[in-house]
Image (tube, helix red, strand yellow):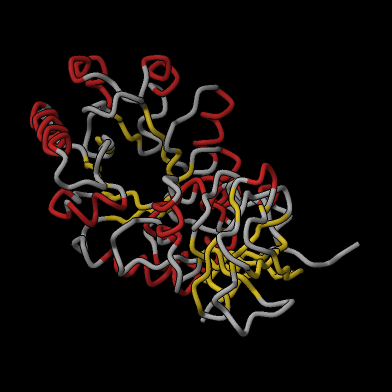
Amino acid sequence: MSKESAELHINFSVIQDNISYLKTNISDHTNFLSVIKANAYGHELEEFVSRLNDFTDGFAVVRLDEAMKIRKISNKPILLMQGVYQQNEIDQVIEHNLMTVLHTHEQINLYKDIQSKTKIWIKFNTGMNRLGFQMSEADQIQSFINDQNVLMTHLASSDDPSDPSNQKQMSKFQDLYESFSTKSERSILNSSGVINFPSHAYDWVRCGIGLYGGVSGVSELKTAVTFKSKIISINKIKKGDAVGYGGRIRAKQDMSIAVVYCGYADGFPQSALDGTSVRINDKEAKMFGRVSMDLITIDITHLNDVKFGDWVEFWSPQHSINKFADYNKLISYELMTRIDQRVRRVIYEN
């Protein structure tokens, strides 16, 4: 059995640098939560916590099991971003000193007896129209509004500062905050919000994708991983020859094609387009042909120094994941979280 494998090299020094950059946009009194749901967006949750615990004020996840893993390593605040729904989960919240989000009527009775035991984040829908109480329902959760808890919302278009919905949402949130006689702490911003609307950082920010370099158009944030694999064959094809399943693309001239040991079973998107940029020996090359389960084909006609066994980088700190995502009309979140466990992880710091 072959020991060759695609590899995911996770550079925690880059993540640390990304955190430091995001923090330059907020004041010292604002608490910085690192969102590390979905196994730290595929960046190994427990490694993240153990290596970067000192660089964050707390952590945020969705699943209770991930919160338990964090609590074994860190004593810092942990937020369950979608809350809990069962009494046994409430017991875990109290036992392990977790913060939790209240966003629906079905949670109110479950939460009413724990107000003095943990910090509750009360989520309002100001325009995202997913989770959260409606503005008109504020009186129904009045008892949860106090100076221990956190009033929160989520911006739908924080990555586009010109979108008018941002100002509408922030205005609604401010009106809501002012409508309560008791002032809670506040949280509204994610990674893009911290970059585009830093004056609204308030008491807590919740940064996820920015930690890993997945915010397009922000050069200060670097891709924190190198996803790569090796060339296992180099083929010569003639003008008019097709490459890959379905013969999606044909050579317009004689060409050299590198076959790379990686495919959609590794988490590389099967939908990736011809012309998607990769790097070989610090030079750019383009995908040529449909992605299969275990193989990708690359046009290396213009490269003279490529050989069997050379590494091909799909994205890296020097070759942004956002370039890959933007070209293929995908999002960096999906690219990060879909990498399969059969891909070998290599963890390091510069």
